[in-house]
Length: 149
Image (cartoon, rainbow, N blue to C red):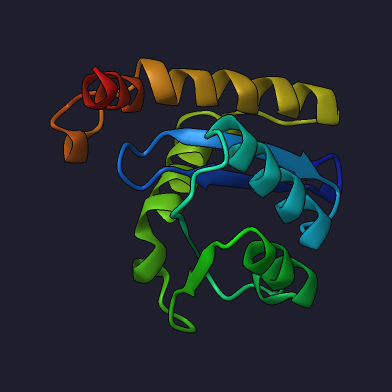
């Protein structure tokens, strides 16, 4: 996302089953540190699940030695999409397209704080109010509530 003339990266971790945005973060650089922070937040929010598959594209931040080692140390299997195949990672691509189309592209940002507020508001809306066709027109929070009931 652009803030004035600068590009800011937004990272998100989605649960593939419920399509819930488990965690997100943003930074002036889309590097391994951003991905590690976002992943660790999701891992803790999910109470450090035992069997976990982390799926991503083959971006440098996901193929970085530090990130791969971190996942390995936690016993997490890593899988990546084929190069140049965005359809392999369609769920996260759809989330970002939706967020840009429904919220972020409608505004001009001149501060990281405003962008952060709008992303937080959109994630809250996306998880709790926005029905998803693939989820039978339920929200991610509804899917999880029904699963854990």
